Length: 443
Image (cartoon, rainbow, N blue to C red; front, side, top):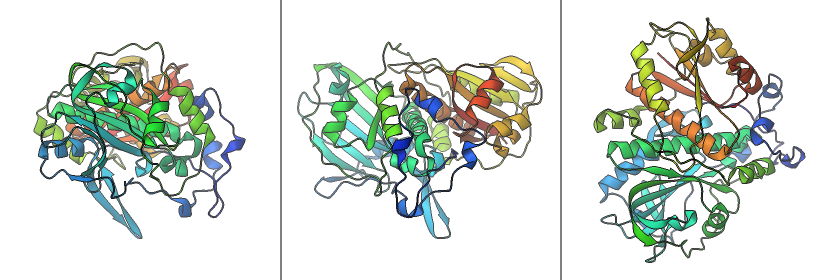
């Protein structure tokens, strides 16, 4: 996934972000314009954050070697899939895409009734593929208590968080968008991993984040985004765990961004939600889906060749499949069709043609003049309104992960594009909604 933007810093100094001030509409406050993307002076590499959070040795380390099913499940959700080396360093790609390969997300899991492991709350360490035992569960304790559910989950509950400075170091105020999209990608990874095992799953976005911040020692630097439930619900009342974890610095360096913190605080209490009832978006054999998960990459360049109409339809069908989530916000999928055999080039909305024409060059310009937006077979724009912003952006990221994986299943390349000229895209689409995410697919 590609983002664009930057924070401006002097040597070893954090930028004073207080001057911008929080805005009631975070998304519109962080739009890109032709002028804004040319106004930065780069990033301070002396403040580059680390991308792995490690708890100290006082928290027991649990090997997953003897738990092959759980190990594979977590690896398919968010594990490391490839090491990339460049002059002066290296980095790891993961099963889930991330803007700038900055990977702000962390994963915690609650295991109950899993053979070979005690009922407890753990942190998952993707680098070592091990767990850290954070808190053994009491008989009535559980993460379910944070969303006031009468019933306990037998299986897994996965908590997805985002350490926002890992992204704001490079992308400034706009980084909350990428943290939300990346969290959605990870939820999409949970969905795909559950589909590989034909497990039931659902997602929770409404829970007591303030209590969780305190209990887990996040101190506002790590933002609780969502939970994925993979298991069966049984009768029994559950309360929040009696837990008081110490603060663990998961980024090394840190510069506070009040715009991000205020934007998150305003978005973190979804209200008047409609529950979504989902179905599996993937109809292939588990082995084929696993291969797609492990081989997924963000493409760097398209060849400009035609894509088949059935391939486009398969990707769109997967993207539009209903989702099991406690706050399901409507999402429109606009498609700028450039090179699909049997389809007239033009602009489509939810597979209905709005206007015909060759708009490929326009698509490239709107995506910050990137060739990906012009040379693709299709460039998707995901659009929604501003009601319940957090679950809306999470859903956009999850749908983005579906587009990535379904493109891989069709042997197409895909690249998520989180940076675009917001207002100009909205004008081109003739929409009053918020442009949340763009993705380009093709050969």
